[in-house]
Image (cartoon, rainbow over all chains, first blue to last red):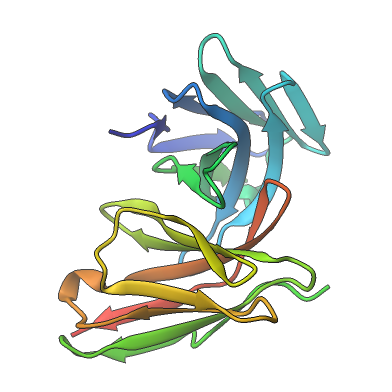
Length: 114
Length: 110
């Protein structure tokens, strides 16, 4: 039972254009969402997060949108740069007693072409 | 602040052996979580410790265990290693709901 899904295994974008990475979830108890960037054999790097009480959060080139009714979130990267090429994971956290447990999607490989 | 550190970075063991991995969280962070990453299963939660107490545990067999010390440093132990335990083991320390990951320990079981 995969509670967090990233249905696109890969995405290819031209430098300077927008990258949109999508994530769907099924568990209504999730109330905090995070995006991470990861290179092979390294730990994930935190990018941006959003609480379920918001529908948008921005940080520089990164914006995360949350649609609670659709149980969908997306990460927008504008403008995309070749250095953004990596695997992107969305993760979800349920408050209450889910101490320290993030549930991750399977990841999307982003390739930004110069 | 220094980030999360994990030692060792790479480890090779044989089936049946045991292994201990170490994690030092970001200064001031009291919660430490452990994850296993494999190509087939992705990132899977192992357990979480806070103030030397395990508060949450994922769906892993009892061969996987951990502990946390009074300085918030944490160790995880895997006993009777199996080939399927080969993975990248990640530790994360958290403040509020945001988790910050270490570089991981790559464990290879032969």
